[in-house]
Length: 46
Image (cartoon, rainbow, N blue to C red; front, side, top):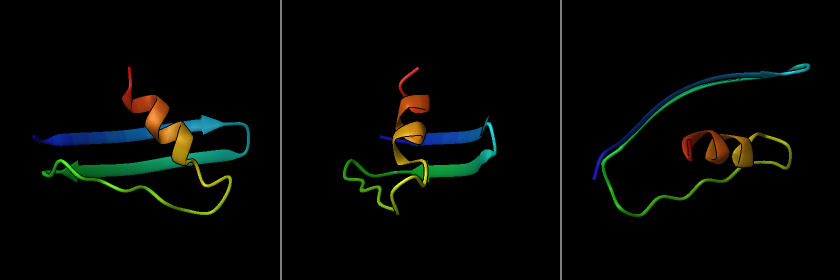
């Protein structure tokens, strides 16, 4: 399975820009509180 994402998101003073390409079925996402983990996942579920 291949997952590719290009995300640009602005919410107030918060800017998220990321590119992601995953060719595996096991993926982990981690980061500090408020880093945008949930926002990134929500944008990929569209």
